[in-house]
Amino acid sequence: MDLMKAFTEKYTKAEPPVMNIGDTVRVHLRVKEGSRERIQVFEGTVIAKKHGGIEESFTVRRISYGIGVEKVFPLHAPSVEKVEIVRRGKVRRAKLYYLRDRVGKAAKVKELL
Image 1 (cartoon, rainbow, N blue to C red):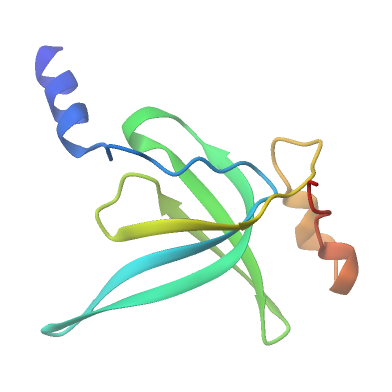
Image 2 (cartoon, helix red, strand yellow; image 1 turned 60 degrees about the vertical axis):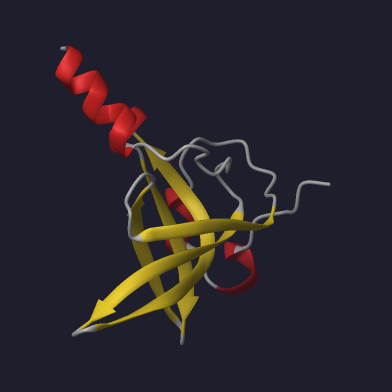
């Protein structure tokens, strides 16, 4: 059990980003293409957070050229460079899967003021 604790402490991020469901975030992802490395940015709404601890992940959804795109990011992955919060969302649900069925302005989340 002590080995698992040491493993968890080694690979967890010192300050994981504090984000909630409904927030619009900008995820900076380190992408390796051949021998080169670059940062790719994925911006969207956090629709779900799952698990906890080292295996915690969050799902970000955006509309790209009229098609809904969702990506699941492990919170403590070394490929996730940083997570910027663009705006806070006002929601009353733990999971926003209902946004998948909405189109246009109906798929927006109100801003928390």
